[in-house]
Length: 429
Image (cartoon, rainbow, N blue to C red; front, side):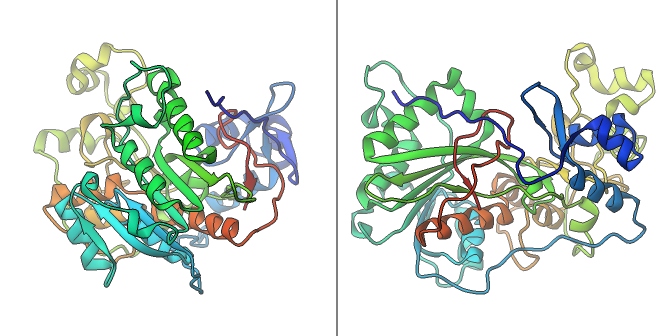
């Protein structure tokens, strides 16, 4: 069985200091620095003494941004000026977040596979001339693409595996959609395979599911590294984590490259500037009366005590923060992770100052789709498509790394552990 890769965090090339030292140099309280860290506005790691350390320049940049009367707008949809000759196949393409990000990075798709009819219509309406194959991936034949695709990518649903057998290999994944990803790899033999999933896959079934996947990659002849990427540090105005697995064919001498986290975040204010008006969900009157009492960046605990109990019901007595309930977003921070609907009680996504859920176009902006990217289907379907998507800019950064790998970029410094102990070894790009 392949062991989980391990890596010790590093802070090379930056001025790494404690919160107290930063507080003394910048005139901002330690509590404020810790709050910014907890909100995901700045990054921290642990040194050998287990002290939490920060990048002084990163804190200074955030401090200046928050106190500026007219901060620069860093929101942009990233796009390379040039196209490469490298090709990709994508399974479970959804509404096209990864597809567009890869195209913007300079990659070319040979095939996009998707079963959802609304998603297929979204893809065909926006990716003119693309080879979009609708229907169940289990019926697809990939053998004609053998040797033609440089990359196979899949944001596969995380289904439970059966562990009844002993080898936990390729055949034991049969019946899951990960098996179709593995089958496509076996039939096409790409140079690189990329798997995307939620962070929770790391611990799914006590880590057994991920171990099976790593064993299958090994059985197929691919070495693997994986990393949890934090979107808010990769030009996405959203705190969204995604587990990315990069597998390289073992006969190739190729470095593993993951995106380097930026030392800034993009706020909701920047992302939604001049956002086109569009349709969106509305609150029923009772919920509206509750949400209008919530201050910007607040949640249910900002309500008067009697309304807390009334709104929360039995949840009021549960443990845990339940910070997504009656939650209003903040202009000066990236959005919380978008779900498939903006008005779900457990994961409320209320506009920062207007008492309403985020609209469809606001959802799309936060996922870094361009305003020209239209979504097919009902309103609920559009929310679902956007909420399930990989942010376009996150996919762009991954795509640029894949291109550098294929072009034979030399290995750089060791990758800093973006999740404080759970990343694979790799190199920064």
